[in-house]
Image (cartoon, protein in one colour):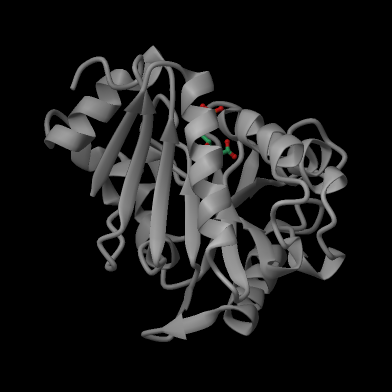
Length: 237
Ligand code: 6PG
C-alpha cells in the first residue's frame, strides 16, 4: 500500500491526473478502468479533458463505472452523466469504449447484465473479472463504490455486481462487489476533505470500528493499493 498526501484537493487532482495520464500513456494495449462517481473525480475529469485531450490514445481506454445511481443518464445524480459532461463529451473516445451502467433499467436486471458484461470484456483471474485499474472514492461513513456500512455483507457477494441502497435517501445503486474490486491489478483511493479524516485514520491505523467500513475491505490481492489524500483527509494520520 502507498499513501500519497497533497497540500490541497486541487493539488491531489493535478497529481492524480498526471499519474493516470502517465499510466495510460505507458501502455500499448487496451486498458480497462473503472471510474468512481461523487464529486472528487470531477476536477480530474476536467483536467484530463483539458490537458491530455491529444496526449492520450483514447482508443486504448475502456471506461467502466464502479457504481451508478439507479437514475437515467440525464439525471443530475448520474455518475455516467457527470463523466460524460466533464470528460467523455470532450475526448475522441470510441462509443464502444464507454461501458456505462444503465441506471435507468431495473436494478436487479442491470446488475446481472453488467456483471456478465464484465466477464465478457475483461480478462478473468480466478474466474473473476480483472480490471487494470479501479478508482474509488470513500464517503464520510466509510462506504466505497456503493457498498455502505449498513449493507457491508454485499461486499462478499458471489456476484460481480450488486444492488445497494443509499442509507439516507434510499436511492437504489448498482455497485461492483468486493471480489471484483480486490481482483484489480491496481486500486486507487481518491479521498479529500476533513470530513473523512477520522475514517482515514481508523482504516489506515486499524482503529475504532474500522472493520465496519467497506473501505477497510479494499485489499487488492495484487497488493497494488494507492491512497491519494489531501492534507485535510490525512490530518489525523
Ligand atoms: C458515488 C461514489 C461514491 C463516492 C463517495 C465519495 O457514486 O457516490 O462512487 O463511492 O466515491 O461517496 O464521494 P465524494 O467524492 O463526493 O466525496
